[in-house]
Image (cartoon, rainbow, N blue to C red; front, side):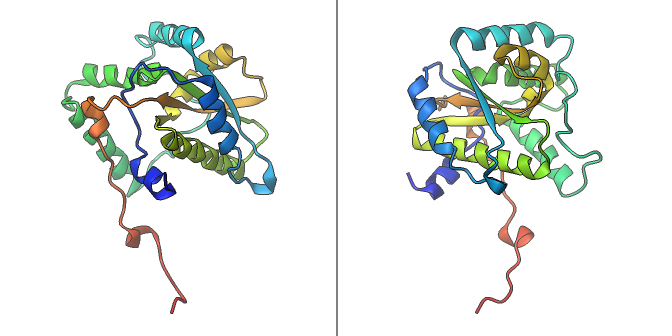
Length: 224
């Protein structure tokens, strides 16, 4: 698969099939993803992979807490700036509207929206969850390295015929994830990545979020 094809076909999958993904496949993906760039070659990433009974136990534990904490606990880091300026606020709002429209949930139906949001905490039924963490001593530049590593994982997943969904929402359950994977105190949970086979029949997986035109974010000078 060409890189361009992997980029075009990558999407945030929100409905997975139960088909298992082998440990050998996960190891291959991570073995290749470690070639992601990082400043000073620090390689400031850590991955904890869960499947089977350990993942099911984590999902069940969080499911019991969701009625009281439907959005999870406050994250250890701000997921978005506050206030969120334009055009970012509009993009985020539209993303939410498009997502719920894809499954026929109106803005007025808050209980249905919360039920859909809670599916984040089951990894949208993905058979594998990757939990990405970073040493607490690292700064914003190393967090950028973390993003490049995650992108590498997600593009490689496409090469293996798999789909993913990066989920910062898991940062709201950092206590539960920390216990489930025995995360050392010096490491902070950044995100989860749900990984598995896409359910092609699920309406929510037909959503394709728009992208800004090139002229909105790029300028060119000095070219012939």
